[in-house]
Length: 161
Image 1 (cartoon, rainbow, N blue to C red):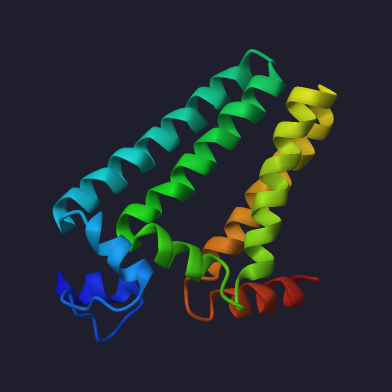
Image 2 (cartoon, helix red, strand yellow):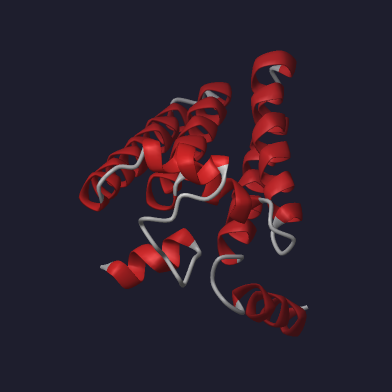
C-alpha cells in the first residue's frame, strides 16, 4: 500500500514527516487517512458515473442539452475524484506538467464549450459535437498517465490511416 501511495503522490522518497514549504504544510493539515481517501475517491467516481448515466437517459428521451450537462458534470466529478488519491496540489501539478498541459487545456476547453453550447447557444447538434470532442480530450488526457500509451495510440492511428 505504501508503494501505491508513493506512486500516486509522485514522490519516490515519500516522507510523511516532511514539512517544507507552505503547500506541504497546507496539504499535511488536511491529510486524510489512506482508507478515507480510497472511499472518497470511489464515492466521487461513482457519483460522476451516476451523473453520466443520468445523462444517457436524457439522451434516450431526446433531450440533448440535459444529456450534455449531466455528461459534463459527471466527467468533472470523476476527474475531481482523483484529487482524493493524490491530493489537490499534487493533482494540479501533474495536470499542468509539460507532458500533459495541452491535453489538460483541451479537456477544460471542451468541458466549457459543451456547457456553453447547451446553456447559452441551446444547439443540440453542436452540443453533441462537443461531447464527442470532450470524450476524445478526456481519453487523450487519461492516456497521458499510462507510460507510452499515447505513442502506441499515435502509431495505431497512423498505421490505420
